Amino acid sequence: MTENPRNERTNPPTRFLRLPEVMERTGLSRSTIYVRLAEGRFPRPVALGGRAVGWIEAEIEEWVRERIAESRFEDDRAGERGEAAHRIPEAGWRAAEARPVR
Image 1 (cartoon, rainbow, N blue to C red):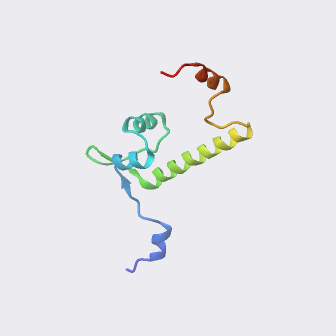
Image 2: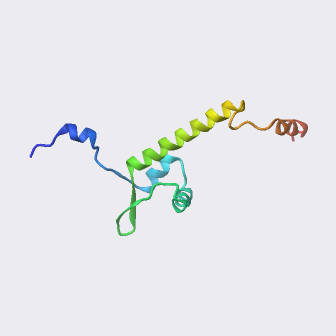
Image 3: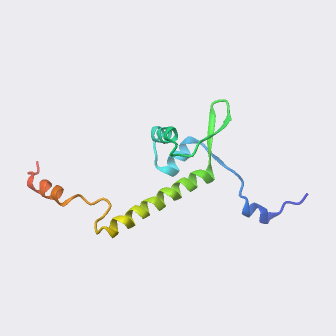
């Protein structure tokens, strides 16, 4: 039987990522990943046998893309209000200026 190379391009092989690679790709710590799993805010791992689990690479990539999109959307909304998403309120600047530096 001859494999169709075009089919491989449309259906890439499923790859499992182990926890260290998931941490590297997401920038999250182990504990944060498991907290978000418990909250239903992170892709669930797949049991690989014994005590081993792995995450589906495509689901982790999608999760990362969604976080990027959410971040961009929040930045856009902040721009519409005329303020940066991470700007310190003006009163905060005044309070910081009033304190002597040690």
